[in-house]
Image (cartoon, rainbow, N blue to C red; front, side, top):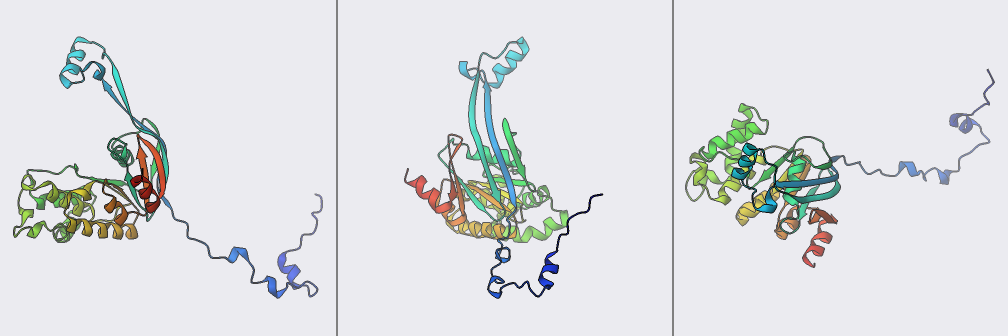
Length: 288
């Protein structure tokens, strides 16, 4: 075997008296500079497309009755209309961020959230998440015939709490929502069908905010509550950002976006038009 050339280690070099390291060079060590702690990503959206296909819509025969009729008669749909709701969206969300999604109606904001939550599979592209995303929207399913009290328990169980944890969190949720003393009445004892839309939104948010989420997505939920509850919700969102992962907020209220988010994604016709710090994107959006 060929003899390897002698390689001196750094310790051997520094031990020799004739080799001295100048004192002035010792403090200058780039590798000792303060390192920023790497923030882990929580959601990665990679070239996501979502296409809705409506069969028979071009001829005005897109109803369920006409669909059953075509199946019975083994007829093909007369036409297919495609709606490209999300077009090649890509971004990375990081732990601790509160990201606002803004844009006019039909820009793909709610559809994108449903894709991230796993409720709508993308037509093309991939979505990766660290943990289970939780979607809170004004249309989140609640049992209208059950009382607020029962809905709180069921909502906690649906989020993965045990029966004991749900019962332990009940008082905090009811108090946060304010429904246990709303206009002098305890609405938690009444069925959900007696609630206004704002009261129902209070309860939905209070249940969702009772636990720490890896990724919490809020779709217009803050817009339906009164100003007092909006302030409580915004404060709770800031707590969630510190405690755990990422918060997404879809809203047409730039006041809520400014008070809650540090990053904003502006969607237009299913495409990201701008993505950056909250102030820059909101100012551009309002000045369009």
